Image (tube, rainbow, N blue to C red; front, top):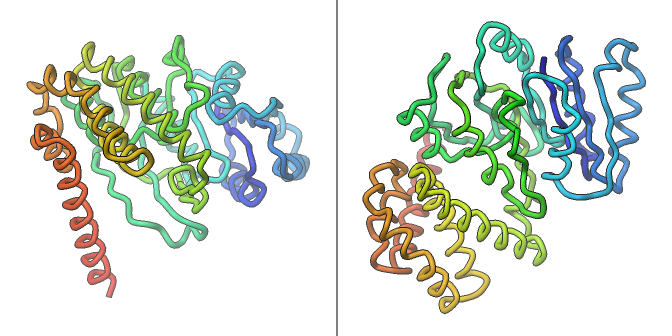
Length: 336
């Protein structure tokens, strides 16, 4: 009924906690596909040790697939080829499933013929009891048609984590995660949403996302930063093209274009940033009538000020920074 795909790479420190969160609530009708993406550490030894302690019927629910290191996208794609479930789920092997994850998901699957199930998550560093505030705007519960209004909300929410949803397996026909890029979720999940006709929104946290200090967005490695830049450029190109077919992509295009120009300023300087800005000017000019689709304040303000060039980006960056400071001060005052 449900296939859970778990790529494994350099998670020796976290994999036991991840597996414990699965085994503590294990139910039938779920297969677990562990894709060893050529991890060089002892992650797989930990996996084998834990699975060896399970009773045979439970152990049979776990599949292990070995491949040379090809990255997260390739590992997920391998899992998709192996999956036999009607529904697909993803779990990053440094994260955890929260209590009642499977019971909640399976009860929805059994009751509703829904294309996607979307749920909330909590964010933490090392200690899951110490969570990090994270705004999640869709506070709705129940089955919904994926009409234009709801899709607009989801696209503006801009949270494309693959692991924050459950998908009908058939949605992945002709759609894979792009290999060789970071931010692969953003390049994939919006297209799955548009293929879907219905969604069940769960107003409950079912997943624990570990925000690691060595994550790709925090890394100071030159190679990682350059790959991030190349990946964001790929997203901006792809979304700019998709926006002409479906205007909802203008929302995500604007979001990632801001990131793209910020990265350009930091890595390549003002001259290159201006050249890249100019390249995508026609997108803003030709789709300006659709700026009403954007509801996030920062992106909305950016589109309104776009004609002022790079100055508009710097103004929005400043206002976002001020807002973040005020938000943190408010949180400190509330916790006192």
